[in-house]
Length: 393
Image (cartoon, rainbow, N blue to C red; front, top):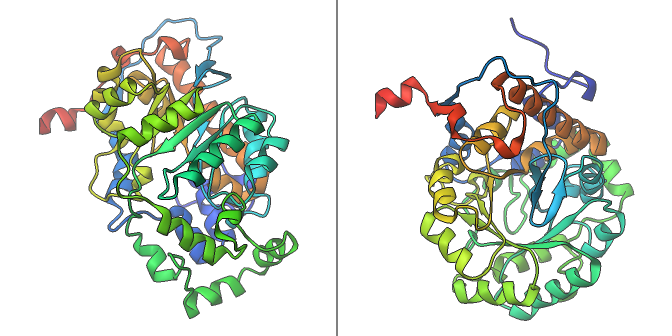
């Protein structure tokens, strides 16, 4: 039986439903910027498919009337083990942008990550975010820019810092090249027609004013989005080393995560320079196509660092059961980006809240059906390789 694609938020019952509604509501270039990845997009697909290679083994006759989902990440007490990865340009998807996500995350009892390429300033988000928040950084060629952002985060009350380390250059995102939503932005005639075909998106954005990346506006000397995008791309530094990362850890002096770790050796080096968390991530498949799925890389990293730091899985989460499998494989929490952005595009703050509600209710149900009563006690005993994978091995 084929079901009608959702046309309203109330008809969305999964993250995939939110994705479908987001596609309906966004101009094509914006949707593909959100949904796309690098080159053939194999790694992006594999991020989600990897979860299917392992089966849950439920335990029966366990009292699961109440299950505990609270945990701590980067020194912050959270109501459940899913945090918001930092995503750039959230206003592209809805005029409320980062404000909507920060508010929804606070209400959901989780940690919100703000990107330096956000379309609202870190100070603006600090003023509206009711829950804990962290700032995501790159090490730029102009080190003073990075250091200035660290100081601004301190003054604004951010609880942690996250350094993204898998972007010495930008990935080849072919959907963006075809739509003209790359760097620099050069929309095609077909893309412009798609914007014209979504007047409600256009007028809502127009009422909010021009799009910009205010966290870097002073450094570029230009409030033009195209100029700012080009500036960010030019500032990515291919010479960044572990010494630079150590310097950022020391400058911050508080909870600190490194995002983009995919190897056990790198995880150990991250521990050595004093980080509080490692985020196992391939940038959602948007950088190196052909890289391992985050879920596949997770066990080696969890084993390499033990309980010395928080291990967070980023990439491919579309179901609550994916979160449960990640916890069983050694993660303390998971990080999501596209799922809440689908919700944002589908319905603003209410859509983000809907995405959180879907994932959290699915996680609780999966725990109950698996005989798990506390996220802190989930371990590898409830997970095994699928028969197909065992046969392949």
